[in-house]
Amino acid sequence: MSDPLLIVMQRELQAISKSVAQLNKQHLEKLSDEFVRKEAILKILGISPRTLCKLTSTGKLPYSKINGLQLFKISDVERLLNDNYGNHTTTSNFTTFKTKNND
Image (tube, rainbow, N blue to C red):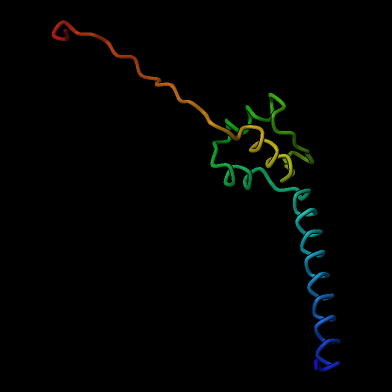
């Protein structure tokens, strides 16, 4: 036979576990709408300020500007990354020139 106290404690533990999972989900949802500074975006994406300027000026990455401070939503950065995720083929930027000695 099972101990009634053990059953009660198990049910309470399951309820606590469910509450923690729900709080974690809410925290992640809130985090995705968090605003971060331009410097953080440069570091996260590993891009130059000029590349970030291109992304903002073309509308690919929206931002908010307050007193000259650019702020970006994490969810917008995630969207940009997801929109550009996939198989990419690269092409060479090098041109081969023939010289007189090349056959």
